Length: 198
Image 1: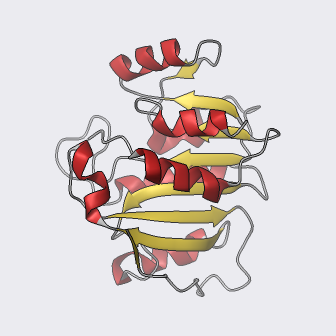
Image 2: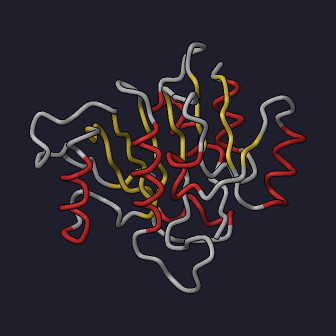
Image 3: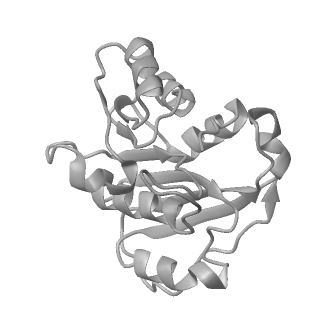
C-alpha cells in the first residue's frame, strides 16, 4: 500500500511543517522520497526510514550519505537510535495495512502517527497525510485523539479532495493533520476543521 503523495500536497505538508535549516526531519515511511525531497529543498537535515527493500535501495541512491534505516515505522520510536531526536516529522503512513499482517488493519495509520509523535522532540511538529476518516471529528477516533492530545496538540486538520491522489493510483479521500509536540490545554478540545481542501 504505497501511494506517493502528489507534489502539490507534499509541498503543502512541508509548508505546514515550517522547516528551517536547523530542523532535523524524520520521514518514517519515506517511500520513493517525494516528501523528503521537499524537506531537503526547505533546508532540513534528513532522517529517512523505509521498510521495503526496493524503495530503501532507491532512497540510498537519491539521498547518498543520509543512511536509510529499514524499520517497521509503526514502531519507529522503539527502533531508532536513542540519539535521533527529530524536530519535525513528515509522514504519509500506510492507511490500513501493517507489516507482516494479512488483511486490513483499521488503526495502522494511527499506530504510525503515535510512534512518530513519541519520538518527536518537545516543541517539535508532526505533519501527516492520512486517510480522511482519521480525524478527531470522527466518533470512532475521538477518544484516541483525546489521549494523543495529552502529549501533542492538534493544531490543524482538513480533509483533502479525493481527486488529489487520482494520478497516483487511488481515489481514497485523504487528510492533512498538523500536531505540535506540546500537551493540549484541554485534550478534549480540537480546532475546527476548515472543510475539504481541493
